[in-house]
Image (cartoon, rainbow, N blue to C red):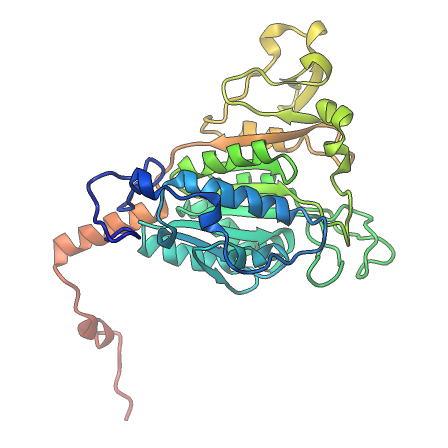
Length: 361
């Protein structure tokens, strides 16, 4: 396949895609500007989506993938406007169905880098079924879920992640629903890569995007995202410098889990398998955990996700789980190749008019 400059592949393949994708020559290296479309970015002033799209555009050149091999697919919602602002192939698709459309594309075109942009309403309400099955199948797509805990595009109704008691236009006396925990949900679907980050922390956001891009299979990233109009400061406790040092638990694979002033706090397992924060100084060092994102059993990562509380007392961010599993597209390609070796080229006409068809007179 020719590169954008008309030159042909000289045998170099991208380190981030096990595919036919080409690495551009040094003179053709892409920059963030190359991924900025000519469309005016239009979200509400102060929306966290501005920070996310800027980080995403700046990160995409690291893929070393031609723009025509990058595809951004979204559903419906404020977050789903993002494909308009990225100069690549993209699709603003159907409410909640972006993972299904992305599954078809990634399965049929393994040379593409496929990214799904969705929100808490789009992904976890009407799209919940498509999300969990894309994750359990381990389709080679990267799903970015912008979580602002509200329906923004439709003007402020409660969403599947809104806290219980939330007063909105659709719940004037307070929401009765218990909210979803997106990370727990993804882990429950046995997702092979699950992470969380925050819109305002560009360095951390970029590091998580990089890890997701390097992962072969489905990658799920929850991004805490502020909606200044309908749910302003929803994550304010995590963004205050003094408070964030105490509340945020930054996960680094292979490193002891430490947080709080002077890294004075750690985690250990409780009597029933739950994780509990403790003072490092008074704890048995042998009971304090180091983060293991590569553990096959998802129960440890799930226990991390259950540290979340409504008051944001202890919120893990980073990569919860990253394990190697066969991806759906690879298994499908192997199955098709095996069928061809066994039966030869398929006969569509024979299939359509086979033993399970009838003539009606």
